[in-house]
Image (cartoon, rainbow, N blue to C red; front, side):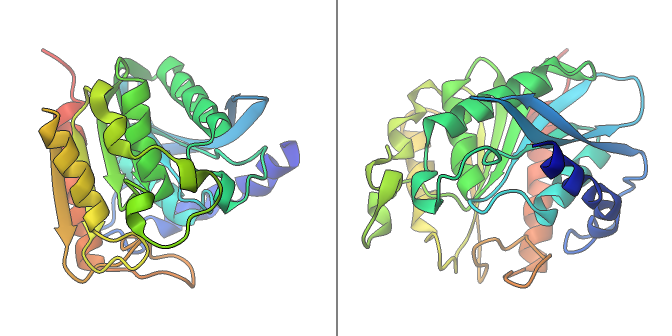
Length: 272
C-alpha cells in the first residue's frame, strides 16, 4: 500500500498541467493543495487524492468517483479543477486492495464499504461542512454515485452521474459475474433525497443512452428531482481527453462541465 501511494505522488506534480487539457478554459488551480491520503476502508487503509483550495473557509465536499478501470489523470484533473472552483474534492481508489476483475466489481459490498469510508473521511475533514456533501461519478463511478445517494440519503445533497449503467439486463447480450445479478438502479432510488444530474452521450457505444433515460424516468415517476442532458454525437467517456483510448468531445465536455458546476453551486451552497 505504501509503495502504491509513493508511486502515485509524482502524478500530483503533473496534474496542474493536465487540468486545462480537454477541460475548457484554464482555471486558476495554483491555489489548490493536492496530497495523497489514506482513509479507513472495508478491510484496511485505502488510498485517495485530496484537493483543497487555500484559505480558512469551510467548504462543500465532493467525492469524484472513477470508472471501472480505476482512477487516472482524467479523474484527477476533473477533481482538481472542481477544487479550483471552491470545493474540497476527494478521488478514492476503490479497487486498491482487491483484485475483483471487471466481472466482479459491480455493486460489490466491499467496494460499497470503501465508498462509505471515503464519504466519512471527507465529511470529517476540518475544511468541509458535513452538511454540504456531493458526489460526481463517471461510468462505473456514475452508478456508484446514484447508489451512494440512495444508501446515504442523510448526507448526500447533490449527485451527478455521467454515462452510467442503470440496468445491466437492459443492456442486452450475455452477462457474467456480479453484473448478471445486479439490482437495477430504479429499484434503489426510493430512499434518494438529493437531486440528481445525469449526463450521457447519444452515440455512446458502451452504455446506450437509453440507460440514462431509464434512470431519469424512474426518478421522475418516483417524485424525485432529476435532470437529464444528452449530447448529440458524443460517445462514452466524452469528457476524458488524456490517454490513447479516448473519444473526447470538447463541446460536450465543456457544456457538461458548466452544467455540473452550476448544479453543484446551486445545491451545495451554504444555507440561509
